[in-house]
Image (cartoon, rainbow, N blue to C red; front, side, top):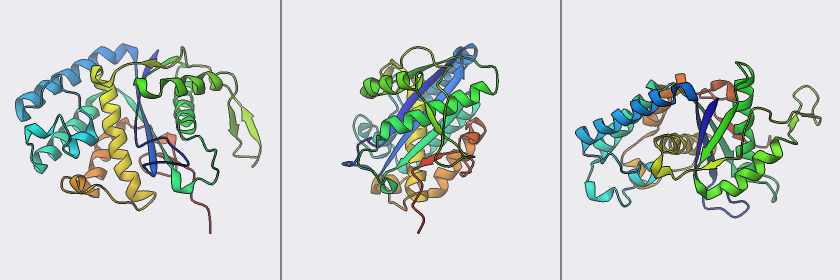
Length: 266
């Protein structure tokens, strides 16, 4: 059985929203390697404590860390140190036996007011985990996520196990009906501060958000983020973990980032 950890960056509101993108990231692994992965991250957090005085039990929330929000402000890490911490974190992720899927909803490309951002992102992510596991050994999988959106995600996952229309690539306008078979149970809630793997999903989701804001909408970053990172840094982070990314999730992006809706052709 596989365990899939989900976290997001951006808000899932539409047509009213505070962010133009919504990123949903899954980090999934076979249960047989969970303990080894956990020990790698636990040892890494000890290294962060030794090198940078980053408390072992302090939750790593990437956006707040980069924008110098509490509780990180009091540690007075300079921009170079923060970049080094992120680089070390991505090198740690590269050591894990995991797979990663990123789905980005590009809100400026949405044409319908009733577009359900979270349902769409979650559906696309679940479908790609299902596709991946179906091609290997048909292992079942279980979802763990933070408590904030658990009700909406439960509704989506239950629907997909009964009714899951997929647009046909061969016959435009037609649908295939292929319900999800490998997902077991409803998504299970867990506080992100209690899970290293949810924090890793948060880290990846935020970096994918930064990448997507430049790639899909030519957006800008917060000034405090720009003082620490540039686009080359983000590309470097994604290249570090590229061997762990399920790049088959999207053939039109070098990092396999699923991005919808596509821009309307002129």
